[in-house]
Amino acid sequence: MIHYDPHKWTDHFFDVRGSLVREISGRVALCVAWAAAVVAVHKHVLPVGMPSTLHTLMGVAMGMLLVFRTSSSYERFWEGRKLWGGIVNETRNLVRGASIHMASDRELLTRLTRWTCAFPWASMNGLRGVDGLGPQAHELPPGQAAEAIAAQHTPMAVALRMTECLREAREKGLISDIVFVALDANVQQLVDYLGGCERIRKTPMPFAYAVHLRRALVLYTFSLPFALVESYGWTTVVDVLLLAYTFFGIEEIGVEIEGPFGHDDNDLPLEDICETIHKNLYAMAGVERQPREALPEGL
Image 1 (cartoon, rainbow, N blue to C red):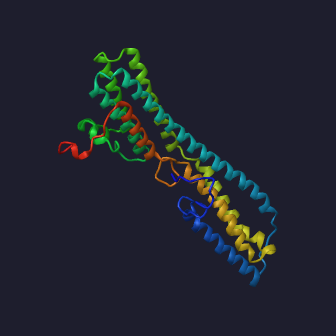
Image 2 (cartoon, rainbow, N blue to C red):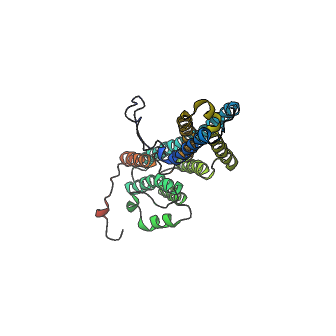
Image 3 (tube, helix red, strand yellow):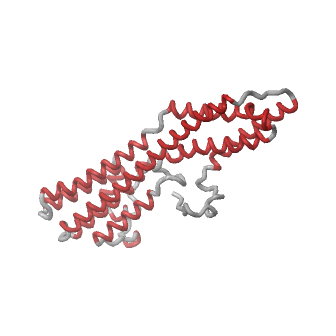
């Protein structure tokens, strides 16, 4: 995600990164070239102008389609952010409660904290279609970490290890059955939040809507020069440039933000969120990061 000050226009007005100019430049350039060809034919070969009433009416429909597209995409983007906000809260609640009830067993509390920190990293990687437990994976028990990475669903394997830590605490008498249920409810909620993210990732915009919108965009922008050439002449090229940039840009924004868990410039800053969780939980439980070079060879 690109961070910027919305009050300062000059800081980002001319930025290219994240503005989707590169993504739509080919389409816009093709529309401009087509508009120039239409004007040239109209001027030097035969008149090809047509009434502009149809495009005036169609422009209203295009605006409604594009507004619905971007609104639906932003709803998915914001829903993803809320779900990750829930992951932040539930990991904090879990370690907060465990830090009080399991303080007498530092080894077990440390292990639970490390597995809890691994859950957001595993979730992020899973949503991106890769495996991994994050930068603190070397701090986890090597055999269990390898099993989690090799599992069919790595985040669920991590959640299972978190619940095992809670069960061990109950068997040692550190927590009661009631406290166990309360703490494990945080783990269940984490799984629910991940399921919500997977729902967003695996359910794209309906195919029919996306195809119809793009067909309508192409028909509108490529037929627009015929409606403008009679009145505007060579200025038609500039008009088509502005309209094509606006319409294709709005559509591309919807495409960019409808899947907010990837690596694009406008996607959610998942690495920053995971790192924030990592720092918060380690500080709360009094766990120190273990550098890789301090580990025994082979781990």
